[in-house]
Length: 314
Image 1: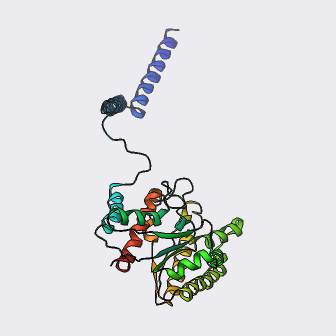
Image 2: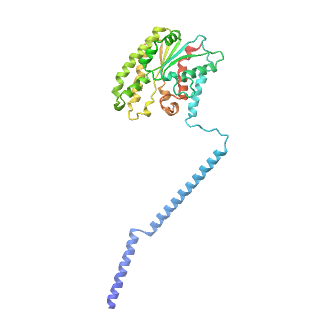
Image 3: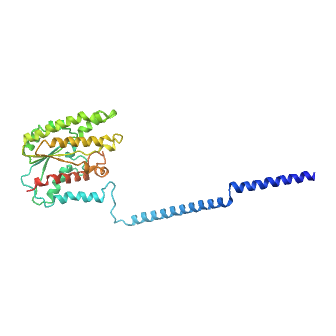
């Protein structure tokens, strides 16, 4: 009996020692403690950083509330860099002496009408008039504006036959035209459910033919008038990101415009795609992200003035 009891105790002791050794080998106490301490220290540091960030944020909010005289930055305003560019419209108009008998006609689509201009001042046309008149005491500069929202080339051709527009063109020294964007929009609307690159080719050739007719009509009515066709920009990426070819399509339509313009000695092409590219969020109207906003029209006015300045000066 005593021998059996002794054997039982010996076996229990061996098993107990084996368990201790196994525990040390598979999960060393020192490393476990170090890891635990490291995690605790990291958590404490993170909690400390969060408390410090919250305290800094509270101090900044308190400082902003107390500083009631500081001007608020309005949502959607342009960067300082863009503001400097926009001020260039006024700088270019300063010391510009306009011919007394100057007649200017603007016709085309919504970009001529000024859709998206929050001031309801006629977009780039109104901005040109205001800046030139405000910076020249003797100037009485006006532009006959025949822009109509939604116009395509075929619709503009029809309107050009009216007595009002044809009479203005006959007397004009300069004719400014924006047209073509709605031709592209029509293709998108007609093939919305299955839009592809090939859908634009026939419409682009019709655009070429009808643009030729527009320029021929202006030239027939007034051979001495200088014609300026303002190019297209690409607002479609915001709606059709899955069709990257749209950027290429807009470039191709601008290329067609330039090719047509080259056939008319009195005509010039004014590019604006580079004005809007990369600046869409600052320069497009927030209600449709398609038309320019006031700042976008300021950019257009600046670019147009660069091209026509030599012709409108005395």
